[in-house]
Length: 220
Image 1 (tube, rainbow, N blue to C red):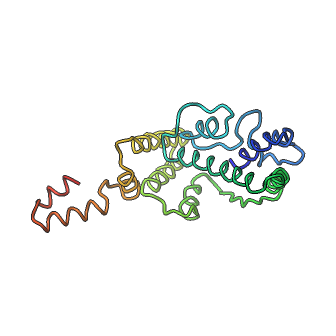
Image 2: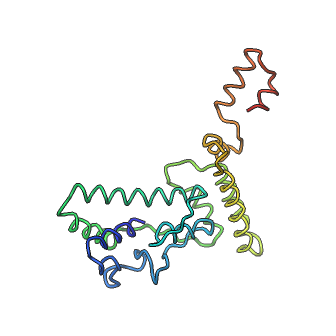
Image 3: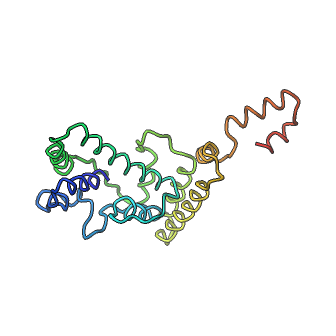
């Protein structure tokens, strides 16, 4: 997405050859698109949004409907805002800075590649080496465990696709307008709709003799 944001800025600067990508100086791993198709393949539940709405030159009218799509849209907006601010800060030297940034990303960026022995190890790596700065939610752990189990069974491809489709439906449901954000976060992390504030209110109502414990839990 950073490369795509750089590409768009290069086009504005009239550097169309650099924007289109030079096969001689852009390794295929760092090329955003090949023949108008994205190089990176995301999960089935969000790849279409990623390819069309995040990288596409003619995004559709549909907005993000699940959390992963929300994050993709936020990342796209972040990079574009960053480059827009740099344009304002640097003024006349922005073009040179942009070309240098592209060179650094395409030729100097280094990646660490972990090669696993078989597909069943992917889930283990996901849980043990996850480093997004956020603790995995209970939903993520359950999904990961189910995907791990599919690798031990026949028809793993179809089973894993079913798991991904089911989780896409769950997250779409959680994103509905009548699902309060705090409730969604609580359910995603604990599997329960009852938040800490719900429990605190319940204790307060019981202590004041306003309701019986079972009635307070029903209201929460």
